[in-house]
Amino acid sequence: MKSFGKAEDYYRARVQSITIDETPSIDWQDDVLYKEQTLPVVESKTAFLVQVVRLDDHRVIDMKKFRDQNEAEEYKGFIRSLLEDLTKNQFEEKFSDKVD
Image (tube, rainbow, N blue to C red; front, side):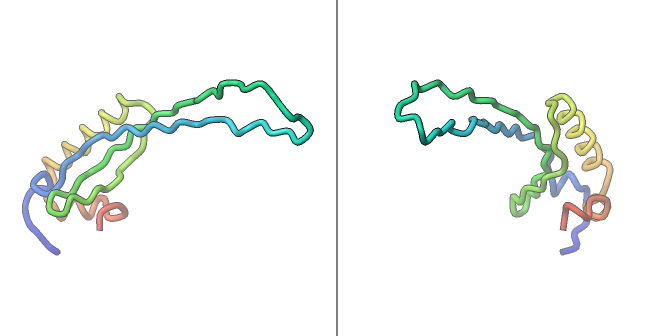
């Protein structure tokens, strides 16, 4: 669908944080009947995903993933400036691999 106007009228940029908790696998031994329970060590990893949300159908488009929140916020600012400067069609052409 072709539409005219500023990209910011059709899209919004945001940063989502994703936390993944990783627990170690169970240490299982067939020859031991009882082993004292040890508390599992949970390791958390956080990633920050810059996304663009299409306002008409609320479709979420993943733009880029970062390990550092400051880098993600900086990239979100870059995407916002593109949304302000480009038309909808120019934005969709620039990111045609992500936006259909």
